[in-house]
Image 1 (cartoon, rainbow, N blue to C red):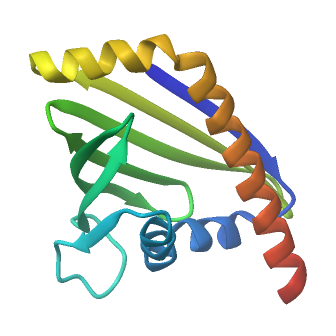
Image 2 (tube, rainbow, N blue to C red):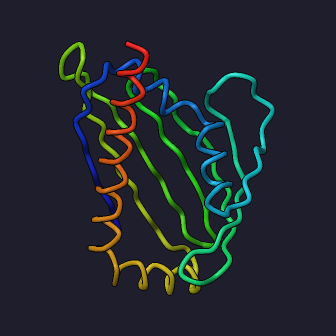
Amino acid sequence: MQFKASEDIEVPIDFVFEQLSDFERFERTALRRGADVVRTDALKQPGVGMGWQAQFVFRGKAREMRGSLSEYDPPNRLKFDARVGGLEVVMAIDLVALSRARTRVMVVSDLKPHNIPARLLYQSIKLVKTNMMRRMNTRLADYAEELEDRYARIA
């Protein structure tokens, strides 16, 4: 199953990529939302091999995720591989410069179940796919607005 969202942002591509590569900010955000997040690598700079382990509640059940950054191509692409139980999740974020001050962000998430409990989770996600797509688009639009505000403060 695949989830796709895209948003055009009135911010230069380098700034967008820099903000998307601020992994510590995302870790803090996850912690504020109730997840337990731990880095599993010792890298000092962002790059391939960064990893995380997280515990969170999804659809009323405690879940554990292990993830890593599998592609890091500034300022064009970030790709993450994760596993939640037997569910494999691959998320790619592609950036395209539409002009010097405008960037298109495209997010694609692919889910694949690998065991029976993951197939059950997969089926429950399938039932709410429309709602999840709507939430994904809303969150990406909100994030785009936040980036535009941040850029306006420093420009």
